[in-house]
Structure formats: C-alpha cells, structure tokens
Image 1 (tube, rainbow, N blue to C red):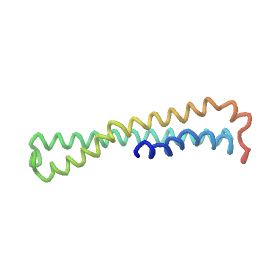
Image 2: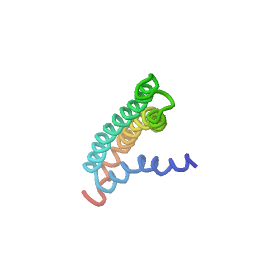
Image 3: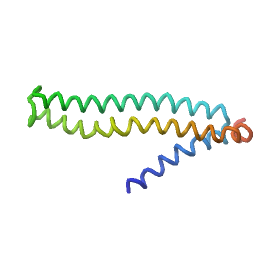
Image 4: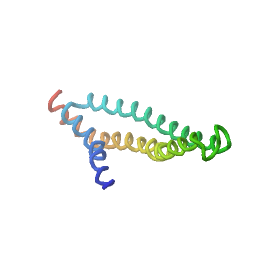
Length: 122
C-alpha cells in the first residue's frame, strides 16, 4: 500500500510542469520551477539538519548527559531519532530528485511548450 500511496505525489511531480507549461505558458512554468527550486532546497536542508540534530541529541544523552540511558529524556530522544533518521536519510535527499525531475521534464518538453504552450494564458 505504501507504493500505491506514492503514485499520486509522483504523478504530481511529472505532470505539474506539463500542465502549467501547456495551459499557462513558459513564463508560468519558469515561476513554478523557481518556486520548486527555492522551496525544495529549503525543505531539503531543513529536513537533513533536523534529522541530524535529533540523531545527535540521542547520542549526546547516551553519552551520559541529561540522565543517560533509561531516562525520560532518552526515551524522548529515541522517539525523536526514529523520526529524525528518515528525515535525514530519505526525505531531504529525495527532494533533490524532485527538483531535478521537474527540471528535466520541463527541458524535454521545452520546445513543445514554447510552440504550443499558453492555451489559457498566452
């Protein structure tokens, strides 16, 4: 079921540049790509840093600080690390792929969008 849940976000990444380019034109597509780049880079850096911070917090507590292992702060840090590892290892880096995929799809269809794009707004 997890793979099926990935279909809609993947389709949005693939079809957003095409729909925007063909319906609203090349300038709107440039705006979408710029927005995806700026927000994607910020989210990727934030996700990677947050995941690393939670991982380091657990290691800090396990080194004997704040009560060490088997303390309430350690239990909270383990939960934070459980959330932080996917952020650090998958969510942040996958946004890089999202940005590249949107740019490559736009580049592949650039000629067609330039010639036939802007069906709603020209």
